[in-house]
Amino acid sequence: DIVMTQSPDSLAVSLGERATINCKSSQSLLFDSNNKNYLAWYQQKSGQPPKLLIYWASARESGVPDRFSGSGSGTDFTLTISSLQAEDVAVYSCQQHYTTPWTFGQGTKVEIK
Amino acid sequence: QITLKESGPTLVKPTQTLTLTCTFSGFSLSPSDGGVGWIRQPPGKALEWLALIYWDDDRRLNPSLKSRLTITKDTSKNQVALTLTNMGLVDTGTYYCVHRPITWAVFDFWGQGALVTVSS
Image (cartoon, rainbow over all chains, first blue to last red):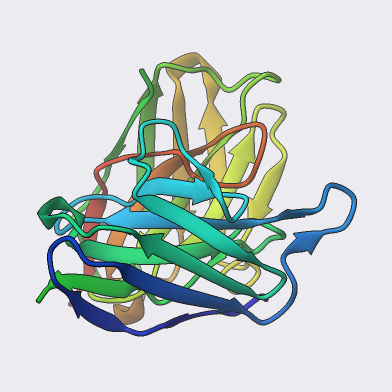
C-alpha cells in the first residue's frame, strides 16, 4: 500500500495569513503517460463529511475558493491556503488516487491563532 | 444534484456482521458514471477506504479487509450495500457512502455518515 504522511499534525495561523500543509507519499504518484500527479486534498469541518478540494495535485474542484491551491510532484505535495479565513478551520487530508487501495494521510488540523 | 444517505444499525456486538445500505439519487450506476463506495473513519483517526462497486459489478476491495468485506448493488433501488463480518472494537467509527466519478479515483460526493459502535 502507498503510505501517505502529512505534516504538521496541527497548526495555528492568524486570520489572513498563509497556511501550508505538506503530504508525502511512499512512492511516486506521477503517472508518466499523462504527466499528472494522482493526489487529492479534502477539507473536513467538525461533524461533517470530507469535501473534495483538489485533485491531480493542483486542479481545484468546482466552487472551491481560489485561496486554496495545491502543488508538488512525485512524492512531495503541498496544500496552501493563501489567506486563512475563519471558515477554513478544519482538518485537511491528502489522498492518493494513483492505485488501489486508495489511501489517505492522517490529517492536519488547522486552527486560528 | 447527487445525494447519498447511509442507513443501518448504530450498535453491533463483537463478532456480529454489520450491514449498511447506501441510498443514492441524482445519478445512476451506468457506464457513463463512476462508482459507489465506502470509506470509514474511527473516532479522531484517519480515513480508510473500504470498497467500491461499478455499474458492471466490478468490485474493488481493500486487501486489508477483503476476507471480511462484501459490496453489492441493487440498481433498481439505487442502493449499494456493505457487509463487514466479525466486527471488533477497532471497527467502531463513522462509515461514509461515497461517489467516485468516472474520470478519476477521488470521492466528490459523500453521505453524512453513519456512526457504528461495536460494544458488548
